[in-house]
Amino acid sequence: MPAPVTPVPVAASRAELTKDSIFLYAKETYYWNEPFPTYESFKPRGYSTNQAVLDAIIKLPGTGKPVDKYSFLDDGSVSSELGGVSGDYGFSIFYNGTTPSNDLRIKYVSPKSPAAAKGLKRGDRITKINGRTDISTASEANVTFVSDAVFGGKASVTLTVVKPSGAIEDIVVTRGSYATSPIFHTSVLTAGAKKVGYIVFNSFTINSRDSLTAKMAAFAAAGATELIVDLRYNGGGSVATADVFTNLIAPAALNGTTMYTTFWTKTMQDGKAPILANQPLTDANGKLQPFTGGANGKYATYADVDYKPAANREVFAKIGAANFSRVYFLTLSGTASASELLINNLKPHMDVKLIGRTTYGKPVGFFAISIEKLDLYIPQFETKNSQNIGGYYTGLTPDFSIGDDVTKDFGDRTEALLAAALNFSEKGTFALNKPNTTISSVRAMSVKEAEELTNDLEKEKFNGMTYDKKFKLKKK
Image (cartoon, rainbow, N blue to C red; front, side, top):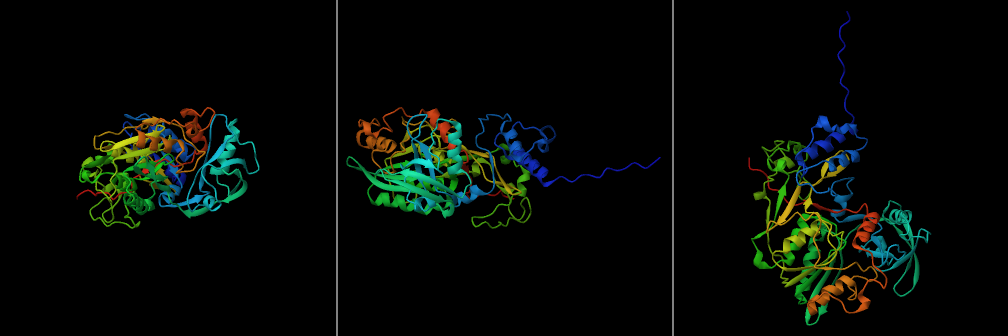
C-alpha cells in the first residue's frame, strides 16, 4: 500500500492577504463591529475585489449603525491633500437655477492652483467643455461627461467661459501639483454699525493653522465683533485643525472646560484590537516613537494607545484675542465632518446661526490603516460636545434654509447666503427684501435635486474627519 501523500499548503497570494486584512481590521476597529461575522462565515477571499470586501462590510448590520456613507479605500491621495498638496485643476463646478439646466458655473477656484493662474473665478459661466456645447443636466450622459472632464484624471480640460462682464474666453487648464490654501477669501464687512469678519474655508488641512490664526487676529484688529464662516464646500479633514479653529473663535472664559470627547470603538477601548500592533504610531514628523513595554516592545503602535473616553477629552484653550458675540456658519449638503465638529463644539457656548442647507451628517472619524499600497478608512470614533450631543447622522439643520448662489463671487454682499447673514446681523432677520439677492428668476433646484447633482459631479470628493492629534499611550 503506498504511503499517504501529505498535502503541501498553498501560500496565500498578496491579493488574498489584502482582502483578509480589510476584514480583520474592520472586525477589531470598525465603530459598528458589534455584532460581526467570523472570518469563516464572511470568507473575504471569496470577493472579487478589495472594494467588494469593503462594500460587504458596509452593508453588515451593527448596533446603532446608520447608513455607512463614510468608509472607503484610498491610494494615498487623502493624506497628501490633508498635508496641503493637491494634484488637480484647482476648481469645481455646479449648475445654477432649474433642473434641467445648462447654466454651468465655476463654483470655486483654489488659490495658487492651475485654474487660478488662468484667471478663472467663482461665478464664471461655462458654455463649452472639451469642444462640447451640450453640457446641460438634461441627461445622465451629459452630467457624466461633465464630471469626468472636470474631476477625472485627464491631463487638461478646455473650457469656454463667459465672464460677468460678458467677455468670452477660451481657457485650457492643465493638471498640476500645488500647495493648497483652503482659505479662499477673507474680508471685513459692515452690517449697520457693526464690523463682521468673513472667511471662506474650504478644507481642514494641516498647513492652514497658522493662516487661520493670522486671519482671526486681523479680524480682531479691525474691530470685528461677529464672524461669518463659509463652510459650504468644506468636506472636513484634520481634527487637530478643527481644534485650532474652535479655540480661535471660542471665548476665553471657556478655557479648561470640555470642548468635546472622542468615543472610540468599544473593542479598541477594551484593548481587544491587537491587530493594531501592525500599525506603527509615528510622531508629527513621521518618525517612530520609542515605547518600551508596548505591543511591539520597542516602538509605539496604535495598539498602545489609550482609547478610553477619560483619556480622550479635549478642553478649550483660547488662541488669540478675537472676541465674537455671534458666529454664522454658511452650510450646504457637502459641509461635513470636521466642519460639523467645529459647529457642534461651539453650539452650547455661543450664539451660533446656520444658513444654507442641512449638512452632510458625519459625527464619526478615522485614522488611515495602511494595507499594502492601500489606506483603509473606516469609522473608528464618534465625537460628542460638552453637552454630550453628537449622533447628527442626518446632518445639522440650518436656522435659515436657502439654496446656493453660484452666480456671484465670494464676498459679494448680494450673494444669497452671505446677504442673509449680513441682514440678520443688522436687522435681526434672515429674510431678504431685495429680489436681486435670489439665485435666479426661475425655479431653483430643490434640496434633494441639489444633493443628488452634487453627488454625481463630485463622487470622488473626500468627506472625512481624520484623527491626527497626539495620542495618549497606555501606562505600562
